Amino acid sequence: RMPVLKREQARDLGDPSGLPKLPVPPLQQTLDMYLKCMSHLIPEEQFKKTKAIVEKFGAPGGMGEFLQKKLVERSEHKANWVYDYWLEDMYLSNRLALPVNSSPVMVFPKQNFTSHSDTLRFAAHLISGVLEYKSLIDGRALPVDYARGQLAGTPLCMDQYNKVFTSYRLPGAKMDTLVAQKSTVMPEPEHIIVACKNQFFVLDVVINFRRLNEKDLYTQLERIRKMADIEEERLPPIGLLTSDDRTQWAEARSVLIKDSTNRDSLDMIERCLCLVCLDEPSGTELTDTNRALLMLHGGGMDKNGGNRWYDKPMQFVIGADGCCGVVCEHSPFEGIVLVQCSEYLLRYIPSKLVRAASMSELPAPRRLRWKCSPDIQALVKNLDMNVNKFTGYGKEFIKKQKMSPDAYIQVALQFTFYRCHGRLVPTYESASIRRFQEGRVDNIRSSTPEALAFVKAMDAEKMELLWTAIKAQTNYTILAITGMAIDNHLLGLREIAKELKLEKPELFSDTTYATSIHFILSTSQVPTTEEMFCCYGPVVPNGYGACYNPQTDHIIFCLSSFRDSAETSSDLFVKTLEGCLKEMQDLCLKFHPKIKIQ
Image (cartoon, rainbow, N blue to C red; front, side, top):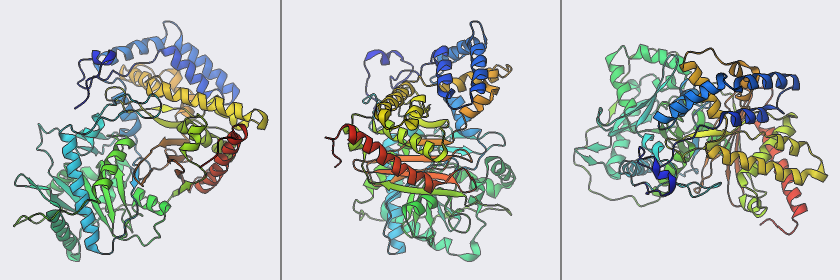
């Protein structure tokens, strides 16, 4: 149960968690910050033009004031005024294929399976853990998450956990839909889908009101394995359709559902708890980087790329070669939820296999049937990934400098980008707004004027400017997590104008606005306590995805870019990043020589 909260938070009695509503920031504050965030990233002439547009938008009695008033009204009758706008803009209206472009992955430690039965035992264990975790969510027995880092200790909204095993992203011609299973309408899903050799099988996890134990799960997985081996029963790899761009997949799906066999198969997949993908060995050396690539796209259609169903929030991948992890459809929840669930499962798995009495007659799992002739091109192997464990130091050294590890790493990423490209660009760092009802994220714009001053500085003033840059980054972080950043607010103003069928305000047709939301550097801190790491692809063709996991004495960086962009190189970025982290450390030691690294 959620704790009872004192203070002003309990005022909002409409929400059982007692969390406050997300505030609408003051209009002028957002407009001033927008100009500050962009002034040093665009040419001077362009900035002058933008400044005039912004001033006109924010003028007394102008369009800005009118839209702001409408947003405030919206916030009064919605639990979270930005949630629907944000979900559509960030995910549902995006037409790019889910693998690499949208779906983050968690890479588990490499497992040492010596036989098929090892693999299936691990899978049975994992499924058992999933069912246990789901019962904690359903019984509202998960401990409440509390904020860590800046303003630590605040209770966070737990709403995202309810969507982990009950939602589905349905492709649409123009926009996808995030479907939530409401148990009032549909019976609770009591099956999972097992993908094996590109075939899909229904595994009932509850039979006659009894949950299958691990021994029974193992028996059923063994049966599935044998069924998948029957060559003459193999059907085309329909799962590949879900790795297409969203509009193409929506069109293919509308052709599929004309046939009742396909309708039934789709219904079983769309209502399942999750997928378990039993992968064939990939035949590659399982370095951290290769495991990250295999999780992100399955190695393409000639490897395990078709052994997936990307619309489902959780796909647990178990490779016969020990390459394991989770692929997650990102629209229902944030990375932290993926981390919490994964860590629970990794802690659950080492426990002993229970020797329980088996059910006498288990009905056989069933293969899903399809009727079609798909013609699909799998994802191009365009992803350039580099997973690097920086061992020079970790968050302990940074904390001894009295600096925030997250802010320090963000400044290091700006320093690196500047070294590689001679400029700074609009940067996205996700900031949790789960302190508020139904809160998801806003953006910390890390390419601050203060970061630019630091990366350009020469030795004499550099330490002073490093402090200033870290302070600016930390302050922006606090604004973002308290609902006072600019991205969600600007999105809200843009979308409410559209909703009211008004002409698009010039602020949003200005090239500066387009530049401001083209995030060449997309970053996120995803810390773990178990030995695993998270990664994702870039969000624009000429960009980088940078996910980092700071540990006591090392930092794991997962850097991605696209090979077909002449502007980017993951290897060069990582090499430069190591140099920049070293330089920042030397700078700190020069000014605080007493602080030694462990």
